[in-house]
Image (cartoon, rainbow, N blue to C red; front, side, top):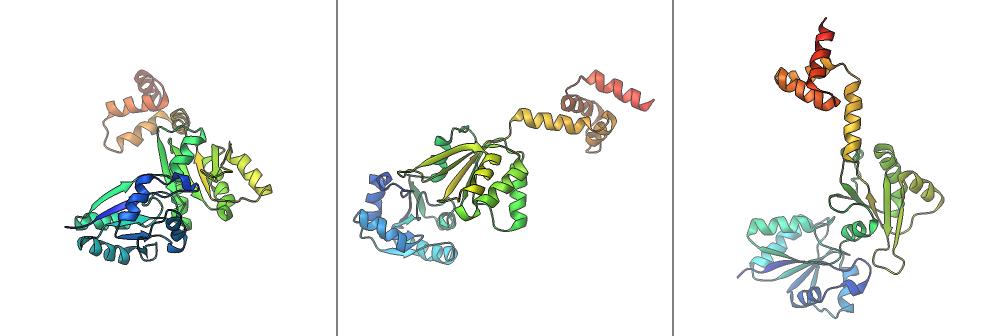
Length: 282
């Protein structure tokens, strides 16, 4: 019988957030795949977990995943842990899960702390709808493309950032998103946990004068539907109704439907659209 993969969440700061189930699973597993064995050994020693460890990180995630899948096919149960938080979020766990499903290996989670969720629920920002972007990519082109997609995002946005890159990221966010409200969360679950509720502009000014320290979770308000609607109307009002009609009709939309869509875009009646077209044609 094949073994199973356990994705075990570990504390993000406070060791008391380790669950009883996670401790039991890690003790019972045949092998623990850890993002950084040097870091994880401290956690295992604290909870007197003697299970054998092997490294599983970003630079060996594909090849090592194959090895771990082979071990599970032989009947071993494997537990995966990261340096902190829930495996599969901003770490190589995703690749291992994919390979497990391809091989028919059962995957389950042992839930616990997750920095993104912890920050979201204490930020004071809307929590019903949110978009998680983790760390922005280092590649300039890809980074810019992602930032541009966030410009029209209506959900609350969550990003991770290291202290030495915080100012740069805040500057880019301000340039693309404008002066949005933001919550900068750090030291989550620790003694000096802090939530800095401010705006992007004020955050920039503050950290230009105060050196950022600690890992940050940025929780940023999304754009409201009213703002998007207003911006769309302003864009449409910059062209004539005839040009507006042509945009839709050039896409193969019939005249009647195009008139209806133009009226909705501009916040006017279909009769007003019809009269304006007649006037433009005279």
